[in-house]
Structures are given as structure tokens and as C-alpha cells.
Image 1 (cartoon, rainbow, N blue to C red):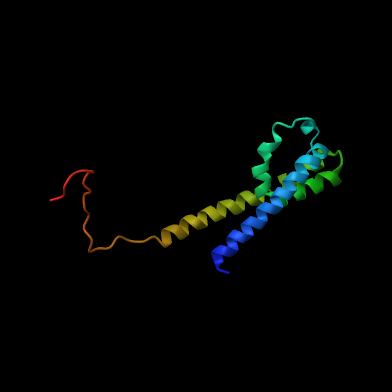
Image 2 (tube, helix red, strand yellow):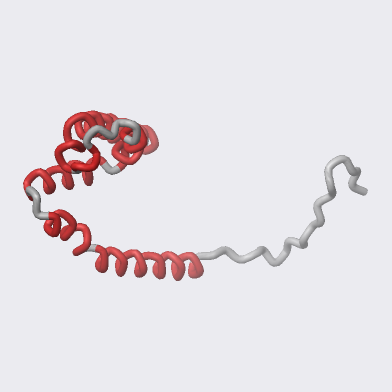
Length: 125
């Protein structure tokens, strides 16, 4: 199996797992974790694309909220605790990508002269 075929197959399995999680979460879990979602069925199909992609996070949060009970402060503490480290990591990654991009940029060949492109329908001399 080539590398591209492996990536396509892995993406297919990832999306199938996400579809299973989306079906379970939208049918059972969303009513149990979010009181405001009870009876609101029109917006649930809008959540499907996001759940297909981030289903491990959905499973993790679903489990945390099921075990957390009614303590609202504890529900939102885990995501807020990682905001600063993630922001610092993203800033460092952006700086690294910028420096790496400037370091490996290509230079224009010295022996090629620029050429003006003629508009369509005209004959070049």
C-alpha cells in the first residue's frame, strides 16, 4: 500500500469512527451534557461535520461532563487551563514556520530574463 493510499484509508476510518460518535452523541449524549440542547433538534445536523473531525475531543469532553456532575466551574476548568500553553505553542510554531520559510526560500535564476505576457487573441511577433 502506498503512502497516499494509507492516508486515504486512515481518513476513511477516522470519518467512520466520527460518524459513529456523532450518531451516539447527538442521539443520547447532547441531552445529558447540555440542558439547553434538550428538545432543540434543528441545530444538531449542523454539528455533524465538526464531530466527524474532532470526535476524540467530543468523547473526552462527554466523559468528563458525565463524571463532573453539576459543578459548572469544574466543567470549564480543563479547557481554560490549557489556553495559555496552547497559545504560546502556536505563537512559537508560527515564528518557527516564518523563519523556516524565509530560510529555505528559492532565489530567481540569474540567467532568465523577464517576459511580458501578451493578452489573449493577440499574435506575438
